[in-house]
Length: 284
Image (cartoon, rainbow, N blue to C red; front, side, top):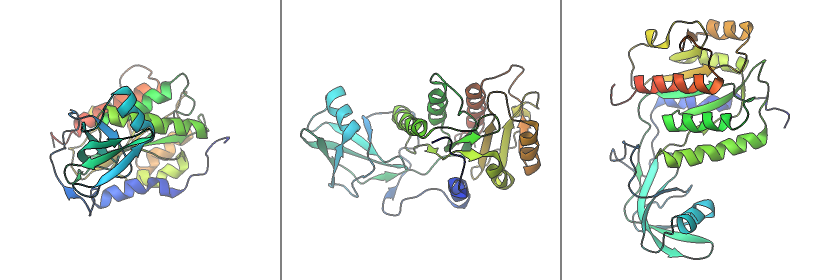
Protein backbone atom coordinates (compact mmCIF):
# COMPACT_ATOMS: atom_id res chain seq x y z
CA UNK A 1 0.00 0.00 0.00
CA UNK A 2 1.45 3.45 -0.52
CA UNK A 3 0.79 4.25 3.14
CA UNK A 4 -1.87 3.62 5.70
CA UNK A 5 -3.05 7.16 6.12
CA UNK A 6 -6.73 6.70 6.90
CA UNK A 7 -7.14 5.67 10.50
CA UNK A 8 -10.41 4.95 12.24
CA UNK A 9 -10.86 6.07 15.87
CA UNK A 10 -11.46 2.40 16.69
CA UNK A 11 -7.69 1.85 16.94
CA UNK A 12 -7.79 3.63 20.27
CA UNK A 13 -10.52 1.41 21.74
CA UNK A 14 -7.88 -0.31 23.86
CA UNK A 15 -7.15 2.98 25.64
CA UNK A 16 -10.83 3.56 26.41
CA UNK A 17 -11.38 -0.01 27.57
CA UNK A 18 -8.50 0.22 30.01
CA UNK A 19 -10.17 3.17 31.75
CA UNK A 20 -13.26 1.15 32.45
CA UNK A 21 -11.99 -2.03 34.09
CA UNK A 22 -9.18 -4.59 34.01
CA UNK A 23 -9.27 -7.33 31.42
CA UNK A 24 -11.11 -10.49 32.55
CA UNK A 25 -12.42 -13.78 31.22
CA UNK A 26 -15.86 -14.81 32.46
CA UNK A 27 -15.44 -18.43 31.47
CA UNK A 28 -12.05 -18.86 33.10
CA UNK A 29 -10.98 -18.93 36.70
CA UNK A 30 -8.91 -16.03 37.98
CA UNK A 31 -5.61 -16.43 39.80
CA UNK A 32 -2.59 -14.47 40.93
CA UNK A 33 -0.20 -17.42 40.64
CA UNK A 34 1.22 -16.15 37.35
CA UNK A 35 1.65 -12.46 38.08
CA UNK A 36 5.44 -12.82 37.93
CA UNK A 37 5.85 -13.30 34.20
CA UNK A 38 9.62 -12.81 34.06
CA UNK A 39 10.58 -16.39 34.93
CA UNK A 40 9.56 -19.39 32.94
CA UNK A 41 9.24 -23.00 33.99
CA UNK A 42 7.62 -25.21 31.39
CA UNK A 43 8.06 -24.44 27.71
CA UNK A 44 5.29 -22.05 26.67
CA UNK A 45 3.57 -21.91 23.27
CA UNK A 46 0.95 -19.68 21.68
CA UNK A 47 -2.51 -20.97 20.77
CA UNK A 48 -5.55 -18.87 19.91
CA UNK A 49 -7.76 -21.63 21.26
CA UNK A 50 -7.27 -22.97 24.79
CA UNK A 51 -9.02 -25.89 26.51
CA UNK A 52 -12.03 -24.63 28.45
CA UNK A 53 -11.42 -26.92 31.44
CA UNK A 54 -9.23 -29.69 32.84
CA UNK A 55 -9.19 -32.75 30.59
CA UNK A 56 -10.19 -30.93 27.42
CA UNK A 57 -8.04 -31.32 24.30
CA UNK A 58 -7.01 -28.76 21.66
CA UNK A 59 -5.04 -29.19 18.45
CA UNK A 60 -1.80 -27.23 17.90
CA UNK A 61 -0.37 -26.94 14.38
CA UNK A 62 1.80 -24.64 12.27
CA UNK A 63 4.90 -22.87 13.56
CA UNK A 64 4.28 -23.79 17.19
CA UNK A 65 3.98 -27.47 16.31
CA UNK A 66 7.24 -27.25 14.35
CA UNK A 67 9.01 -25.56 17.27
CA UNK A 68 7.76 -28.17 19.75
CA UNK A 69 8.67 -31.26 17.75
CA UNK A 70 11.51 -30.27 15.40
CA UNK A 71 13.40 -27.72 17.50
CA UNK A 72 12.77 -28.81 21.10
CA UNK A 73 12.13 -32.47 20.23
CA UNK A 74 9.12 -32.68 22.54
CA UNK A 75 7.01 -35.81 22.38
CA UNK A 76 4.09 -37.64 24.00
CA UNK A 77 3.61 -36.98 27.75
CA UNK A 78 5.96 -33.98 27.78
CA UNK A 79 4.44 -31.18 29.85
CA UNK A 80 4.06 -27.69 28.33
CA UNK A 81 1.99 -24.52 28.71
CA UNK A 82 -0.33 -22.87 26.20
CA UNK A 83 -1.25 -19.18 26.32
CA UNK A 84 -3.54 -17.12 24.08
CA UNK A 85 -1.87 -13.69 24.29
CA UNK A 86 -4.90 -12.25 26.10
CA UNK A 87 -3.91 -13.16 29.65
CA UNK A 88 -4.97 -16.81 29.79
CA UNK A 89 -2.66 -19.74 30.41
CA UNK A 90 -3.08 -23.49 30.91
CA UNK A 91 -0.69 -26.30 31.82
CA UNK A 92 -0.98 -29.68 30.18
CA UNK A 93 0.86 -32.30 28.23
CA UNK A 94 1.22 -33.61 24.69
CA UNK A 95 -1.27 -36.43 24.28
CA UNK A 96 -0.67 -37.32 20.64
CA UNK A 97 1.74 -36.40 17.84
CA UNK A 98 1.29 -36.91 14.09
CA UNK A 99 2.78 -35.40 10.95
CA UNK A 100 0.85 -32.13 11.04
CA UNK A 101 0.16 -31.35 14.69
CA UNK A 102 -0.10 -32.34 18.32
CA UNK A 103 -3.06 -32.90 20.63
CA UNK A 104 -2.69 -31.00 23.91
CA UNK A 105 -4.66 -32.13 26.97
CA UNK A 106 -5.18 -29.72 29.87
CA UNK A 107 -4.02 -30.96 33.27
CA UNK A 108 -5.77 -28.09 35.06
CA UNK A 109 -8.37 -25.43 34.45
CA UNK A 110 -7.09 -22.38 32.52
CA UNK A 111 -5.96 -19.38 34.55
CA UNK A 112 -6.68 -15.76 33.69
CA UNK A 113 -4.28 -12.98 34.73
CA UNK A 114 -5.35 -9.31 34.36
CA UNK A 115 -2.83 -6.72 33.16
CA UNK A 116 -0.64 -5.43 35.96
CA UNK A 117 0.07 -1.78 36.77
CA UNK A 118 -0.24 1.25 34.51
CA UNK A 119 -1.03 0.49 30.87
CA UNK A 120 1.35 2.40 28.56
CA UNK A 121 0.32 3.11 24.97
CA UNK A 122 3.30 3.96 22.77
CA UNK A 123 3.03 6.16 19.67
CA UNK A 124 6.30 6.29 17.74
CA UNK A 125 7.09 7.57 14.25
CA UNK A 126 9.29 4.68 13.15
CA UNK A 127 8.03 4.14 9.58
CA UNK A 128 11.29 5.33 8.03
CA UNK A 129 13.60 3.17 10.16
CA UNK A 130 15.70 0.68 8.19
CA UNK A 131 18.08 -2.19 8.77
CA UNK A 132 16.09 -3.98 11.46
CA UNK A 133 15.83 -0.92 13.70
CA UNK A 134 12.02 -0.99 13.64
CA UNK A 135 12.06 -4.69 14.54
CA UNK A 136 14.32 -3.89 17.49
CA UNK A 137 12.02 -1.08 18.68
CA UNK A 138 8.96 -3.32 18.52
CA UNK A 139 10.73 -6.23 20.19
CA UNK A 140 11.94 -4.12 23.13
CA UNK A 141 8.55 -2.41 23.60
CA UNK A 142 7.09 -5.91 23.90
CA UNK A 143 9.72 -7.05 26.38
CA UNK A 144 9.35 -3.95 28.55
CA UNK A 145 5.59 -4.41 28.81
CA UNK A 146 3.97 -1.72 26.63
CA UNK A 147 0.25 -2.38 26.31
CA UNK A 148 0.04 -1.17 22.70
CA UNK A 149 2.21 0.33 19.96
CA UNK A 150 0.95 2.60 17.19
CA UNK A 151 3.10 3.67 14.22
CA UNK A 152 2.71 7.44 14.09
CA UNK A 153 2.42 9.14 10.71
CA UNK A 154 3.87 12.64 10.66
CA UNK A 155 4.93 15.27 8.16
CA UNK A 156 8.40 13.68 8.16
CA UNK A 157 7.32 10.04 8.40
CA UNK A 158 4.31 9.66 6.16
CA UNK A 159 3.78 5.92 5.63
CA UNK A 160 4.51 2.34 6.62
CA UNK A 161 3.93 -0.61 4.31
CA UNK A 162 1.44 -3.44 4.80
CA UNK A 163 4.05 -6.18 4.59
CA UNK A 164 6.13 -4.41 7.24
CA UNK A 165 3.18 -4.36 9.62
CA UNK A 166 2.76 -8.12 9.07
CA UNK A 167 6.43 -8.67 9.87
CA UNK A 168 6.20 -6.60 13.05
CA UNK A 169 3.25 -8.70 14.19
CA UNK A 170 5.47 -11.78 13.98
CA UNK A 171 8.20 -9.97 15.92
CA UNK A 172 5.70 -9.20 18.68
CA UNK A 173 4.61 -12.82 19.00
CA UNK A 174 8.20 -14.08 19.17
CA UNK A 175 9.12 -11.46 21.79
CA UNK A 176 5.97 -12.21 23.80
CA UNK A 177 6.98 -15.86 24.06
CA UNK A 178 10.62 -15.07 24.80
CA UNK A 179 9.90 -12.67 27.68
CA UNK A 180 7.05 -14.79 29.13
CA UNK A 181 4.35 -12.16 28.70
CA UNK A 182 0.79 -13.40 28.94
CA UNK A 183 -0.72 -10.34 27.23
CA UNK A 184 0.49 -9.85 23.67
CA UNK A 185 1.28 -6.21 22.88
CA UNK A 186 -1.32 -4.74 20.53
CA UNK A 187 0.02 -3.37 17.22
CA UNK A 188 -2.47 -0.75 16.07
CA UNK A 189 -2.88 0.53 12.51
CA UNK A 190 -0.86 3.68 11.78
CA UNK A 191 -2.30 6.98 13.03
CA UNK A 192 -1.95 10.59 11.94
CA UNK A 193 -0.92 13.13 14.57
CA UNK A 194 -4.28 14.87 14.14
CA UNK A 195 -6.12 11.65 15.05
CA UNK A 196 -4.07 11.45 18.23
CA UNK A 197 -5.12 14.80 19.69
CA UNK A 198 -8.52 13.83 21.22
CA UNK A 199 -6.89 10.95 23.06
CA UNK A 200 -4.06 13.14 24.32
CA UNK A 201 -6.72 15.41 25.78
CA UNK A 202 -8.48 12.49 27.49
CA UNK A 203 -5.40 10.62 28.71
CA UNK A 204 -4.43 10.77 32.37
CA UNK A 205 -0.78 11.29 31.41
CA UNK A 206 0.66 11.97 27.93
CA UNK A 207 4.42 12.45 27.58
CA UNK A 208 6.03 13.87 24.44
CA UNK A 209 9.76 13.26 24.02
CA UNK A 210 11.33 16.63 23.18
CA UNK A 211 14.93 17.86 23.04
CA UNK A 212 15.76 20.40 25.71
CA UNK A 213 12.59 19.82 27.73
CA UNK A 214 12.44 19.31 31.50
CA UNK A 215 13.87 15.87 32.45
CA UNK A 216 11.13 13.26 32.58
CA UNK A 217 11.84 12.21 36.16
CA UNK A 218 11.15 15.78 37.34
CA UNK A 219 7.62 15.78 35.92
CA UNK A 220 6.24 12.41 36.98
CA UNK A 221 3.39 12.44 39.53
CA UNK A 222 2.81 9.72 42.09
CA UNK A 223 1.80 6.56 40.16
CA UNK A 224 -1.68 5.07 40.60
CA UNK A 225 -2.69 1.54 39.67
CA UNK A 226 -5.71 2.66 37.66
CA UNK A 227 -3.77 5.08 35.45
CA UNK A 228 -3.26 4.75 31.72
CA UNK A 229 -0.62 6.71 29.85
CA UNK A 230 0.62 7.68 26.41
CA UNK A 231 4.22 7.95 25.19
CA UNK A 232 4.81 9.98 22.01
CA UNK A 233 8.10 9.93 20.10
CA UNK A 234 8.74 11.74 16.83
CA UNK A 235 10.51 10.64 13.63
CA UNK A 236 14.07 11.17 12.44
CA UNK A 237 14.22 14.94 12.07
CA UNK A 238 11.67 15.27 14.90
CA UNK A 239 8.14 16.62 14.78
CA UNK A 240 7.48 19.92 13.06
CA UNK A 241 6.81 22.94 15.23
CA UNK A 242 3.16 22.81 14.18
CA UNK A 243 2.80 19.19 15.30
CA UNK A 244 4.48 19.87 18.65
CA UNK A 245 2.24 22.85 19.34
CA UNK A 246 -0.89 20.82 18.51
CA UNK A 247 0.03 18.08 20.97
CA UNK A 248 1.06 20.50 23.72
CA UNK A 249 -2.20 22.40 23.32
CA UNK A 250 -4.10 19.10 23.57
CA UNK A 251 -2.46 18.44 26.95
CA UNK A 252 0.75 16.52 26.30
CA UNK A 253 3.75 17.27 28.51
CA UNK A 254 7.15 17.71 26.84
CA UNK A 255 9.83 15.67 28.60
CA UNK A 256 13.59 15.53 28.11
CA UNK A 257 15.74 12.40 27.93
CA UNK A 258 19.18 13.83 28.51
CA UNK A 259 21.63 16.11 26.70
CA UNK A 260 22.27 13.95 23.62
CA UNK A 261 20.38 13.61 20.35
CA UNK A 262 18.68 10.20 20.37
CA UNK A 263 17.47 8.00 17.56
CA UNK A 264 13.76 7.22 17.42
CA UNK A 265 14.17 3.71 18.80
CA UNK A 266 16.60 4.84 21.53
CA UNK A 267 14.27 7.60 22.73
CA UNK A 268 11.27 5.28 22.71
CA UNK A 269 12.96 2.57 24.74
CA UNK A 270 14.65 5.01 27.15
CA UNK A 271 11.34 6.69 27.94
CA UNK A 272 9.37 3.44 28.17
CA UNK A 273 11.97 1.78 30.41
CA UNK A 274 11.96 4.78 32.75
CA UNK A 275 8.18 4.77 32.99
CA UNK A 276 7.90 1.01 33.46
CA UNK A 277 10.27 1.20 36.44
CA UNK A 278 8.38 4.22 37.81
CA UNK A 279 5.02 2.48 37.44
CA UNK A 280 6.14 -1.01 38.52
CA UNK A 281 3.09 -2.58 40.22
CA UNK A 282 5.40 -4.02 42.89
CA UNK A 283 6.31 -0.45 43.86
CA UNK A 284 2.81 1.07 43.77
